[in-house]
Length: 124
Image (cartoon, rainbow, N blue to C red):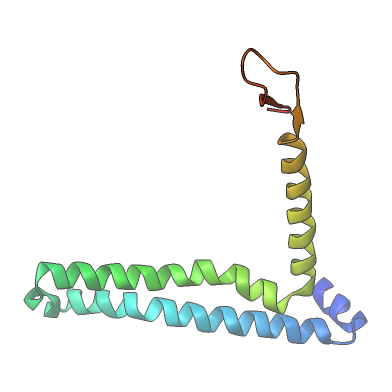
């Protein structure tokens, strides 16, 4: 209910963004899960017993990789279809970069012993 009100206030653009996100996620999920499901049914039916061990392993690894495609793609789908997610990620990335820069602030200190190029890394 709340999402519908926000969508109506934004002129309906959020509705299309939401539909595009759901459609892209569903398509990628379907593409990524079909090979694993087919492989499991293949082996359950006994047809996989005629494959060599290396073929079976290679096929299993390929289907496993395709099933991880769904997990990896969600970030990119959200980044492309949801502007507020992009802004959130920009804000978080900027904050992280600023924090890392403060932690790794390098300053020159007085030379120690025979090494005039000694530096100290502060904040660690």
